[in-house]
Length: 66
Image (tube, rainbow, N blue to C red):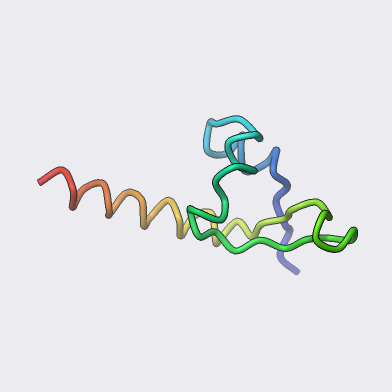
């Protein structure tokens, strides 16, 4: 079973604050899960989705810097 990452895990992995993750995960189009609590439940992320986002950002950055 895939271990899900918390907002704090994602923030640490990306070197940003948890607040930045909360404010931007939708804009970054990173799929997330709400665990319990319905619409206000804590967010969880798959590591593979975070890595895919990093790849997209890296490729996007390379393309826009030309």
